[in-house]
Length: 364
Image 1 (cartoon, rainbow, N blue to C red):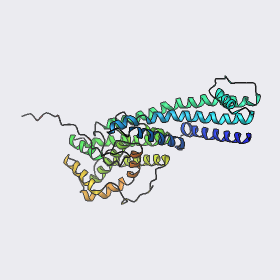
Image 2: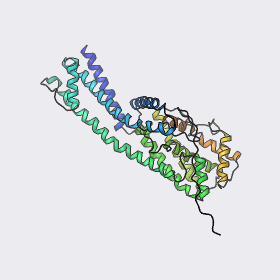
Image 3: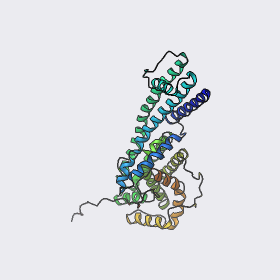
Image 4: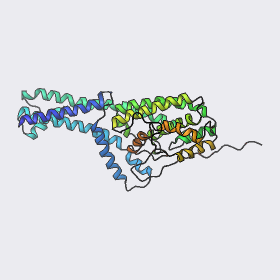
């Protein structure tokens, strides 16, 4: 039965090394069953550990450990896979007992050498195993700066958004806040920045899906919620004020945003319609949209279209990203913000907290 052991060992090595290449080397957004499995298992454990706690902030503190645990579990899964594969092959080639085979494999894999011997038939396997362990560990070490570089770029823009809209982000409040302070025209620069960020997120989060598990430093921030908010603001801007100077930038941002979300959805297995009808179904209702339009109008945002006239335009944009955005907010346990869908835990959508107006009264 040694040949069965050899075939099994070869299969384990191919699967393990394939996982390493898919996650750390090949920049094609191939996805990873290992990452998805570890993510789901760790998320399930953390969510159940946090179940007795009350309040979103307490849950967020537990879920902040999701990404580090997944990263460590990835490395140990690969090392255990290599150990199992080389142990099975050494048993097949040498006829050593099972304990001695795995002892030899571990000694070579971690370049310890305490179980080395003069058996010539194992020299090649010992050399390959001795190279595999350090290579996998080195790839993981080199992987971390790439992850944290992408994370920092993402969170920088999410943090900057807080100066324009309070936490948690909401598209109509973004328009309302700019109308209140007279900076609506400055939204062009914001749309341009988020067009580039959406492209960056689409590229990095498909190549390195574990980035989806990295949470923002503050509990009421979330890149998913922030991206949905900026896209909603852009869609409302186009729909309500189609001749504004910021409309071209808003269109480009929307296109970049839902393209990035679709790329991520393909990798993580979220189903979506690649060509939805403009009048397709939405979870957001007309009544909710009408309330949001009244909200921005009270803040002084100039309307060129009525609620009824702008609704089909807004709906035609949002149908491209609503389902994917809600699914990502759900799977990442994002802060329960307005217009961002449901969560697994009991929650009520949180409205952004507008700071108190501290401006001095006009001089007499």
